[in-house]
Image 1 (cartoon, helix red, strand yellow):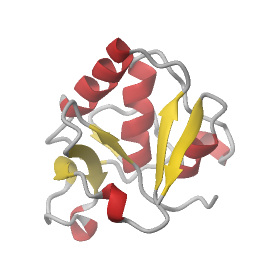
Image 2 (spheres, helix red, strand yellow; image 1 turned 90 degrees about the vertical axis):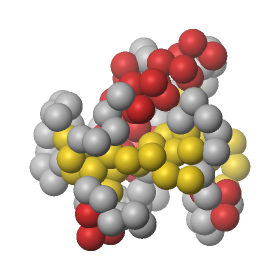
Image 3 (tube, one colour; image 1 turned 90 degrees about the horizontal axis):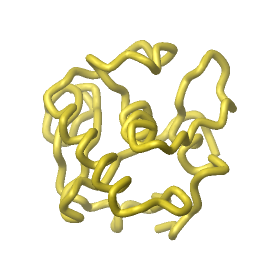
Length: 131
């Protein structure tokens, strides 16, 4: 697992994801947290990851938290994972699950950065499948 990559969370509708991109990398040319069509099943090398023992209430809580962040800007300060007015991709997913009571941080990246690999390598998550 590398430091780079991308992360998203499935919304309350499985056909939609909530993701954060910088505008110049966004497939819809919008900055920050937005809703996207869920096409992750067709992305080569993508992982579908879930927390262990998560309840339907926790799924709803995490998805709801992420949805409530739509419209917020992109967080370029990767060292400030606790910022909640802007989000980078894996920070958004980590914070959504943390809000639901599940911490997916591994501490593998120095200075508290939440990398996409943390979501895959966390002892609190498992890989459902790799595309």
